[in-house]
Length: 130
Image 1 (cartoon, rainbow, N blue to C red):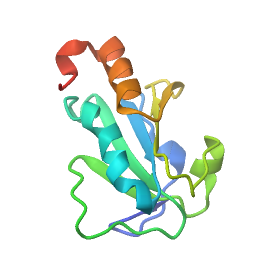
Image 2 (cartoon, rainbow, N blue to C red; image 1 turned 90 degrees about the vertical axis):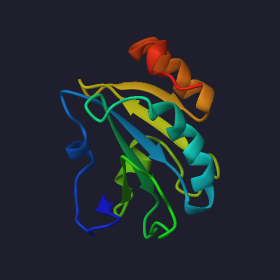
Image 3 (tube, rainbow, N blue to C red; image 1 turned 180 degrees about the vertical axis):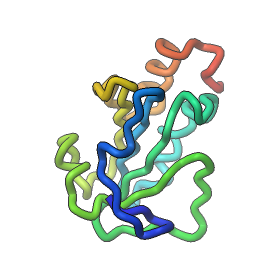
């Protein structure tokens, strides 16, 4: 993975932490607006509970107009992330993979409702923003 802002290389496994969930949001450049809907239910969670990472396909760069607060943006420069989660980089449907602190996949969702269901079940309805 290559950091979108700093052009630094990192490994997918470096994103995981034994103390927080990680939301990997896979999207193409054309589907970034749809990816925002997947991020919305996560906004109520603090950075101590959840790390959010937007993963773009190889050779993709974020637009200077994107405003993702508390979301890291990386490019899947070696295509390991997309293939590791059986996703297609050319898909027009963004997908979220939430990984638990023990590095196990907790949920896979392509809709805001799917993300909200998981957040409500794990973190409680107090965290879910309506």
